[in-house]
Every structure is written in structure tokens, then in C-alpha cells.
Length: 82
Image (cartoon, rainbow, N blue to C red):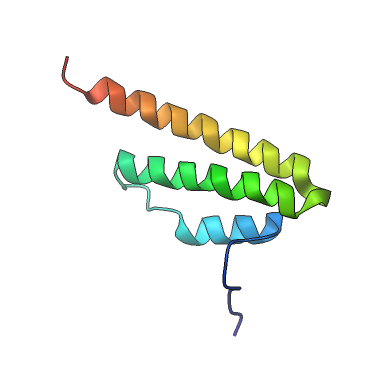
């Protein structure tokens, strides 16, 4: 049986594994998805510091998740009453 390491992920692969594990279901609310993408940005930005051999990839993933978060924020703003 494989156990997860306590604490935040330190490698890019560990980050991918952890973020897949906590990923919301497809039907989750926009605020839940926004929180997930914001968390993902933070995780990948930290991994860029702790896994220097994959820092470029980690920063790519952080930017990718940031774009998703901004898209969710725009969708949420569009739903606000005028």
C-alpha cells in the first residue's frame, strides 16, 4: 500500500499526484473550482523553488492554472446581477 507524504509536495510529480487527488468533481461549483485553481497555482509556484530541475515546467503549470482561475473569476463576475 502506497502512502502519501505529509506536508506540501516538493517535486513536480508529487504536485501532480496531490492535485489530481484533491481535484473537484466536474459538477463542482465555480467557487470550489476557483479555490482549486488558486491552490494549484500556489503549489506549482512552491514546487518551482523546491524542485529546481523542473522549475520551468512547474512555472508553466502555475501559469496554466492561473489562466483557468482567471477564466472562472470572469464567469463568476458575469453571473453577478447588474
